[in-house]
Image (tube, rainbow, N blue to C red; front, side, top):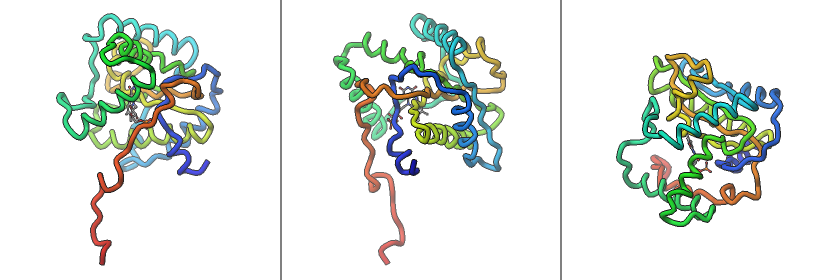
Length: 225
Ligand SMILES: Cc1cc2nc3c(=O)[nH]c(=O)nc-3n(C[C@H](O)[C@H](O)[C@H](O)COP(=O)(O)O)c2cc1C
């Protein structure tokens, strides 16, 4: 697959088919992804790969916590500002509205929206879930490295016909993850990634997310001479 096609066809898939993914396929994705650049080549990523009973047990416990005591769980790093603001809040709202519309969730139907949010903790039915952590003694720059590694996972997955969804939602439930996985105390759980084959019939996989045109985020200098 041409790199352009991998980039263009990547999207966040929120309903997967259940088909098994052989371990060598995942190893190939991870080996490629580890070619990501990182400051001074520190390669700060660590990945837990879950499938089968291990994934089910973790999902069961997180789902229970998310459904009954979500207030007691907070992430160890702050992804978003306390108060979002324009132009970011508008974009964020738009993707929420578009997802609700695709799913037929009526405005104000908080229960239906909550049910959809909770599907995060099933990895959206993907057969494989990845959990990515970072040594907390590193610094802000390593989050850039982690992002590049994660993007590589999502593109390398496309190269093998798989789809993904990045899932920061897991960062909230690091305490439960620690009960299931040997995540060292000095590691922050940064993000999950669902990995599998897209259910093409699912409405939540069939809406477009907009992007700003180049002029909205770029300033060119020295090109008119
Ligand atoms: C680091 C990161 C974390 C994300 N976390 C979640 C998540 O927890 N749940 C979810 O449904 N989508 C999550 N997303 C997906 C974004 O909503 C999505 O990338 C964005 O709306 C653009 O859509 P696209 O990925 O289909 O291009 C995350 C994306 C990124 C990059």
